[in-house]
Image (tube, rainbow, N blue to C red; front, side, top):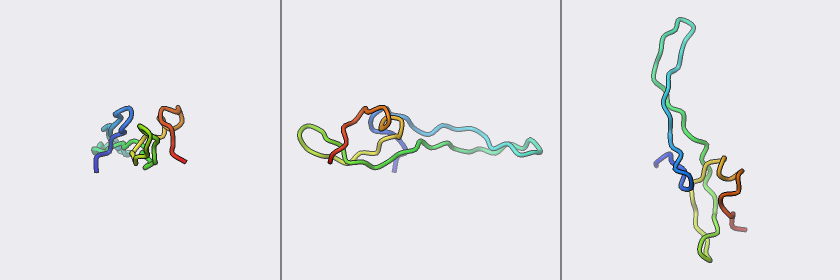
Length: 63
C-alpha cells in the first residue's frame, strides 16, 4: 500500500542511518498515516491521512 497522505500528498523521505563509525546505510522516513472515516459529499469514506492533517482539521471525521 502506498505510504502517501490522501489530503496533502506527503510521502516517504529518504536519508541515512549513521553509526558511531560514521558508516552510512540507506533508510526511509515514512509519514505517520492513520486510517480514518471521513465525511465527504454527504457520505462517509475511509482515507489514509497523516497526523498533521488530522491535527490541523483539514478533514471532517465521521461520527
